[in-house]
Amino acid sequence: MTKMSPLLERNAHFAGSYEPAALGIPSQQVLIVTCLDHRVDPAIVLGLELGEAPVIRNAGGRVTQAVVDDIAFLAVLAEQLFVNQDDPDTLFEVAVVHHTQCGTGFLSDPGFRHQVAEVTGIPEAGLEATAVVDPHETVGADVERLLTSESLSTKVSVSGHVYDIATGRLTTTHDARYPQHPAAARASYGR
Ligand SMILES: [Zn+2]
Image 1 (cartoon, rainbow, N blue to C red):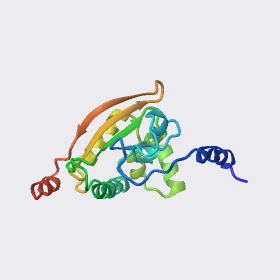
Image 2 (image 1 turned 180 degrees about the vertical axis):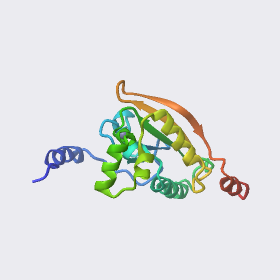
Image 3 (image 1 turned 90 degrees about the vertical axis):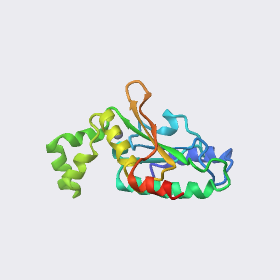
């Protein structure tokens, strides 16, 4: 037995009327980075349908090196898929979404952080950096982290948003911008 049993029943219902789509460009041209919290599912709070937007989720929705690497890979993949499109100068927008009441906020407590570090072996500094206490502050930091990453394509823009658990409302805190880092500028001059 598995706790998946009721979900497998839902899947059987889903597959009954399913139409597969070919691999292509996500139709909303947006990639969402957000928290793994089960109250913040982008498919539900943003009404995403299959094929509309890739989603990267981790604790806090933080822009880690792994997230930066995934976005770099997806930009190369999108470039391949965009080959026959009219507007190859833009690929997609990365929307970083942090939220209120984030469970990673507990990591700002030194005692709790120490305990987690002891049990998991994760360095305390890494845990402290993960904590989302004020989502407006951390989303700004993570938008900057992406925009200054040398591996971010100049054809990818980045925006920041905060989701309020209490109201269900998403607010844009940082409008979409393209990277201005020196390596990106060099790459675009070379085009
Ligand atoms: Zn969270």
